[in-house]
Length: 277
Image (cartoon, helix red, strand yellow):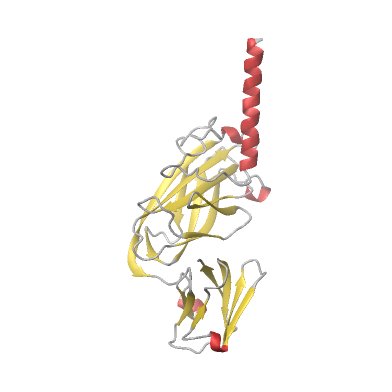
């Protein structure tokens, strides 16, 4: 009888872990990056049947520019890659903090089919999304890409904390291996105002992200702007500026809801701007 109870308990325990793993395959819980004050999915018990940082595997955070410094108010593409030869299901979570363990910068999703952003406990996280969907299944490795908008000048050293999970199948996700890593970058003294090159758009936006206003700096010197249009990234809201609403190649965005927008100056190319309040 005692053996039967133990066996039943083990089966129930594994079943619970399996259900948790399936649920978290969509979006993981926050605060599991291993950052100061946080656990990982291994120490919190979600994937304790796996191995923590096994050899010949790993998770890597990489700036696509290859830089190990950042310029204030600039936008960078970042990739996170988990390599684990026996795995096909992958998940991750990442946050960026300063030396006081405070949230730094902002994340921008590039592919909403496999990445997700959330706020919790005063920190922002970017995570996997729908890890078990066929289009997000890997074969020994998986890479996510997203953007990070650097904080203002004077923010100092920033550390990215990431934790990931790799499993042979969704059924065995509870026994998936857990991988952790960090990446620290120093602030460059150069002041940045956009990640978009002059020769593509003919102008730069500043600041980015914006709070009260957006300014335009043109590659070929001062230019009179006829109209500017902002489109919300979901296409639901449009804000148009013309005439008296344009002043010294600036527009007031203090009343526009925070979010990621497409901006078009005149009839030119669409650019991206993040508004925060």
